[in-house]
Image (cartoon, rainbow, N blue to C red; front, side, top):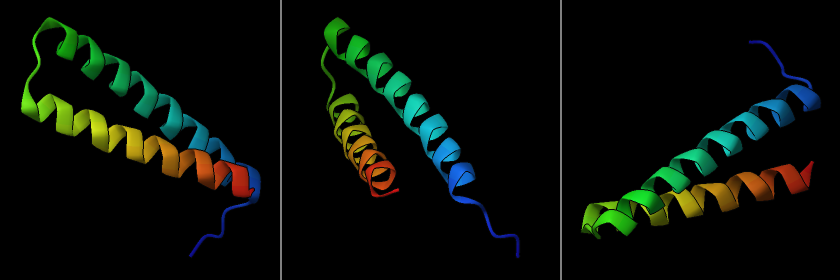
Amino acid sequence: MKHELPYEIENKCLLTLEEARAQLAHVERKLLAGPKAEDEVERDMLKARIAQLEAALAAH
């Protein structure tokens, strides 16, 4: 099993964080067009994921 170096982990977290933020922006635009329960759930899940990723990056 390959062990990742700290900067490799950080780079992956940053990419994932950027993707999650882009998805969140997309979902929020959809909610502005017309609120739907599934979009609200997706928004809340993305916000939680972003918080997890930010915490992981802060721990490095």
